[in-house]
Amino acid sequence: MPDRHLLILRDVLVPRVLVSDPRSFGGRLDGSCLRGDLHADGARVRLHISAASDAPRLVIPALVEPHCHLDKCHSIARMVDVGGDLSQALARQRQDKLNWTEADLIARATRGLNEAAAAGCFALRTHVDWGDPAAPPLAWSVLNGLKQDSPLNVHCAALTSVEHMADPAYCDAVAGHVAQANGALGAFIHGQPDIAPAIANMFDAATRFGLPLDFHVDETLEPLSGLEAIADAAIACGFEGPVLCGHAVALINDEGDALARLLGKLRRARITVCALPTTNLYLQGRVAGTPERRGLTRLRELRAAGVPVIVGSDNVGDAFCPLGQHDPMAALSLTVLAAHLDPPFEQWLSMVTTDAAAAIGIPPPFVDQTSVENLKVSAAQTLPDLLAGRAPLSALLRPF
Ligand SMILES: [Zn+2]
Image 1 (cartoon, rainbow, N blue to C red):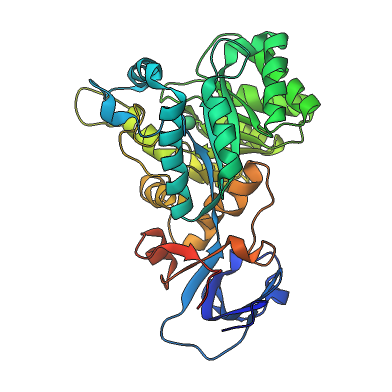
Image 2: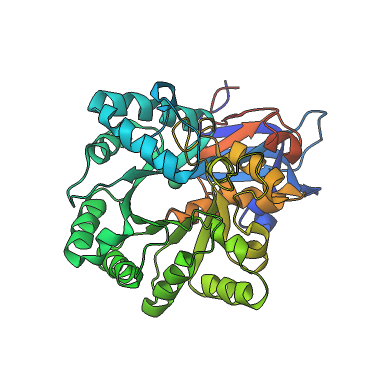
C-alpha cells in the first residue's frame, strides 16, 4: 500500500493552461500539456519527470456546472403537448409546478446532483424560480436543504422576474434570503420595459449584501438590449462581485462598431457570459420547418474582446429542453460544434473549470492550487478524446 500521505500517479498529462505556475509545477512540455509522474503530498501537487509510457492519462481539475435548474429537471416524462418556443415552454413548466411537492423536488434534484457528480463536477450553481411573493418558494428551501448533504459545493441563485425588482423592498427581502443561503441574486430579463431602475436596485442590494449576480438575459434571436443595461449598471456603480449573464442570444444581431462598443462595456464591467447551447438550440429560431437561425451568443467575438465566456448545462429533461445532461464537458462538446470553437481545445477548457469557478464566486481550481480531492483523471490521452466523452473523468484520490 502506498504511504497515504504521498499519492503517486505514473505518467500523466496536465493541460498547461490549467496550471497557475507551470515553471514550479514540474514535468516536461508535451504538446499543450505538462507530462510526468504526479506526486500529491498533502496539499501540494507537482509533476516529476519520468520515463514516458504508452498510455499516459489526462489529469484536470474537477468541473464546475455554472448554470442549471434542479427545480425543473427530469419533469418531461409527465408533460403532454411539449415542444415549441420559449413562451410555450414557460407555459408548460408553469402547469407542471402543481406537481412540485417536497418529495417530488427532492427526488428530481437529487437525481440531477448525482448526475453532475458522476460527470466530474465539484461545484454547481442551480437557479431556483422565485415567485411573486418575496418569501422563498418551497424549492428554495428544499434545494438549500439538499446541499447540506451533497458532496458538491452547491450554490442556489434566486431566479426572479426583473419587474419585481423595481420595488426596493421586494429586492431587499429576496437579497436577504439569498444572503442567508450564501447564494446569488438573479432575474429573468426578456424585453420588459424600463428595467434600468430594477437592475440598479439589484446591484445596490448585491453590494450591500455582498452577493454575486446572475441574469437570464436576452434569451431570443430578436434584438434586445438587456445585456447592455446590465453592463451600464455594473459600470455605473463600480460593482466588484462576479456578474454572470446567461444566454445573451440577442447579441448575435449586433455587429461592427455597435458590437465593439458593447463588448468593450462588458469587458469594463467584468461580466462573464454563459452560453447555454442545449436550451437555446432547442427553443430559439423556431419556424414551421427546419430552423435557419440557431440560438447562440457571440462566443468567439466575446472571447476575442477579452470577455470571459463559459458554458453550462441549463435545462435537463424539462419543458425547455427535453434532452440534455448535467455534464459541463458534454455542454462544451456541443458548443465546440455549434460555435466553431476550433482546436487546440486547451484554450476552451477554462469554460468548464477556472473561468466557470470565478464566474460563480469560488477560487479557480488550478491543478497546482486546488486540493487533490478536486482532481480528476481520465484514460483519454488527448483533449479531443476527452471532449468527445470517449473516456470518463474519475476521482484521482483512490487506492491504486
Ligand atoms: Zn437557465
